[in-house]
Amino acid sequence: MDNLFNPETIFGIIGMAVTLAMPYLYAAIGELFDQTAGCYNLGTEGIMMMGAFSAFYVVYETGNLGFGVLAAAIVGLLMGLIMAVISVTFKAEQGISGIGLTMFGVGLSSLLFKTLLNGTVLSVKGFKSIRIPILGDIPYIGDAFFNHNIMVYVAYLLIPIASIILYKTTLGLKIRAVGQNPQAADTLGVSVNKIRYLCVCGGAILAGIAGATFSIANINMFQEKMTNGTGYIAVALVYFSGWKPWRVLLGALLFSFVNALQLRMQVLGINIPSDIAMMMPYLLTIVTLIFVKSRDKPAALAVPYERSEN
Image (cartoon, rainbow, N blue to C red; front, side, top):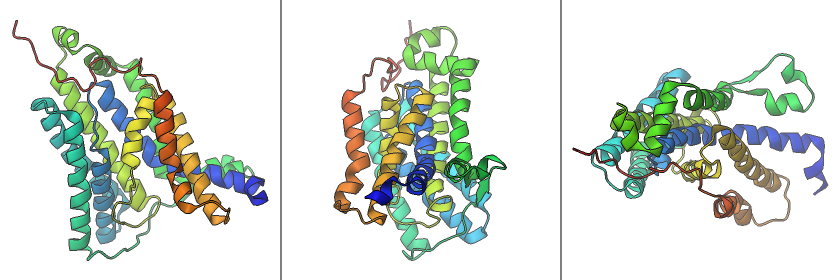
């Protein structure tokens, strides 16, 4: 147990948490835009699985990491369009359609894995760590915060970018208006359906990239069901954050720290059942949602918009 509290171990856990927060941030920021516009996408998990496979397969075949990220984004966009058509155009129940999309994505990624790679777990060369000059040389802190791959740095940049878009731009004002009062927004000339399509598709692109971070920026291999519920936790993080980007960051770091802690405890051989350790992030999800107040929830969340003819 003493090994858990020395500086090297503590900052090692923090550095791991910074990396593990990466997929949460991509997926949760995408979902934040969805929900702010009045939609929610429980298909995030399936989109992430398809993003993970498509990125891995493209990198495996071409060796080009940029193409891998692009492939994940395109697959995310296509699946986002499916979700938008079902939930926005046909106004289907968003929860059921999202679960269906997850089942589709998980199943299709497994089928492609077995068909194209014969179900063989392979590895690729993923993104290399980039040490930030000067900051990266600070003892302990440098490795924990300033020695990560480019996908990690971009994930954290999404937080201020999302804040600026939502609260400092006309587009952000329209997104928030559509989520709060679509009738009023429509009266002012805002196309509710276009805004919702934009957010659902944009969120799905980020979910696809979130999946890619598993297969080409972190683990650097593809396995069936490798996202392991991350998509659902990302949806929960939006509720946890009160629909605020900076709180998404705090929530992502909290969940990733718990995950990193349980992984390090297993490595150190601390006497705790592995099943209980693996349950810790999901138990935290349940506990936090119990105490989260939804007073800041967009008023029109999950409510299909029917344009009045009067």
